[in-house]
Each structure stands twice: as C-alpha cells, then as structure tokens.
Length: 61
Image 1: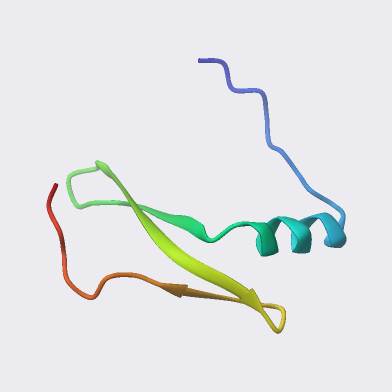
Image 2: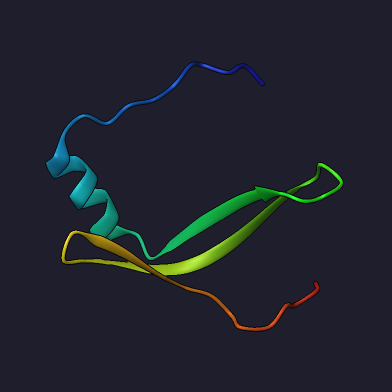
C-alpha cells in the first residue's frame, strides 16, 4: 500500500456535510504493547460539536 500524503478538507461546508451524512466514527489508540486498538463509535454532529456514544462494557469478538 502506498501512502499518498495528508488529505486536507479546507471547506467548512464540506466538513459539515460529511459529518451530517455519517453516523459511525472510529477512535484509534495504541495499547501498552504497541498494538493499535480501533473502536467504532456512534456519533452525531449537532451545535458545531461531535457527540460520541459507545457501549459501556467491553465486548470480545
């Protein structure tokens, strides 16, 4: 896979349109062993803020 560089969206209208059209985002972190953890989270964009919600207990698949 080739990295194509950093993408930037400079139009506020495009950002707002994108946030209003999506319902699931992802939070990515690195655990204590250096492995990535990516957690999908429901979100809504309202009042110029992003509100996120996730399950309150850990699930293993």
